[in-house]
Length: 115
Image (cartoon, rainbow, N blue to C red):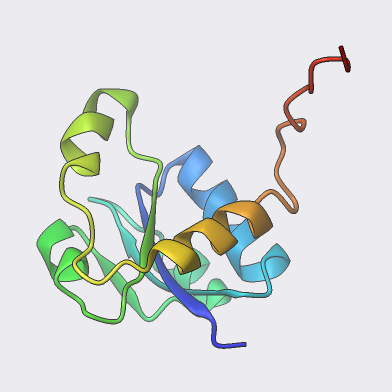
């Protein structure tokens, strides 16, 4: 299986948690980039992240980036969602979405009882 190449936008507490989950708990993910005004170089090195930048366009224009995880402050989500990566594969994004639940700190959504 070819890994899905991912970028995390935002390297605060939530961004770090998602980046670590991608690296350690999602076998089909390769974390290539973290976008944030301030990225702890030692932390990024420990995860093997080759690109750390404050330049969002650099990451969104990278043809290898297939999916992004937006962990920037909530007020920026709409702006960022409207600028998806150019070559995102729908099937890859769906697969990663399913597998990224592994190691999540959130409980799984409750299913309604059968009728």
